[in-house]
Length: 122
Image 1 (tube, rainbow, N blue to C red):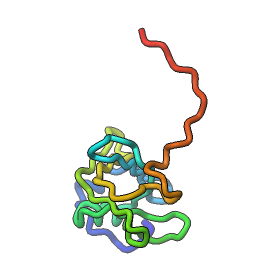
Image 2 (cartoon, helix red, strand yellow):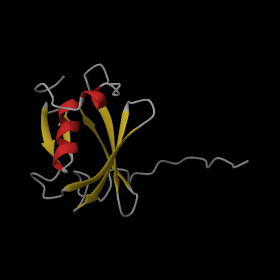
Image 3 (tube, helix red, strand yellow):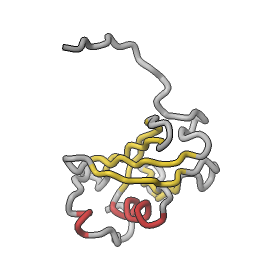
């Protein structure tokens, strides 16, 4: 665990499959557009804070601290729902995004498309 002992519901905590450093990937999607906005990381306490405050809270691997999206930028994320994937190793956080989601100032962090050959359907 990165931070303090968490008050995360033990039933939820038991379902999480964390990385060796205690984190779960959080894929963030915009409620209205369904755009995938960003990928961030949560430990048990960040997930607890997200679920109980309605504000997206993440664990910064570089700064080794919690951060609430928008606390310094003003680009807030208001949580609409949180879902756990079937393996328990990723979260889908659906939010109302205010302003840019990416630290570069763009709406989404996924704006740099790579060349890929489209697959064919059956």
